[in-house]
Image (cartoon, rainbow, N blue to C red; front, side):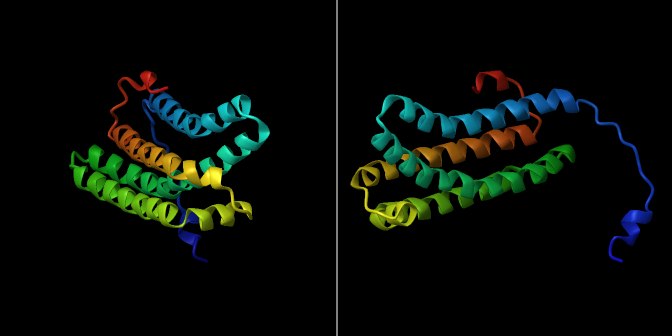
Length: 169
């Protein structure tokens, strides 16, 4: 019943000029970000023994939560700024709001990791691992920087600023 208008509406064809040229920068940026927060665990697995690689993977997983938790903000900002750009409106305020929200959420996560590292590690592993405690905060700070970088990259993409995307990897 609720979809009646949608089902009965007629199709409208539209031209999506430049969509293929635009999709390459988006693919490169997205793939680079995903690779960036996964490659450290792969490298740790090849350079460390199984025990230390597992400890590093645990600390890295705790840190990656910051990145994953802030990605919805990027995904929400993208269409808003793209729409503003197409309508010749400024989207700087939206970027500042998104950046503030990411910084706020990341700061809360960093404080939780700093104040309760034993509890967080126990929550994820079921046991106390002092070695993971010593690197979790450092990795979380690095992931916060990655979240801010991700916001900036997606903001530029939403504005159609794709020049120089090949140097990102």
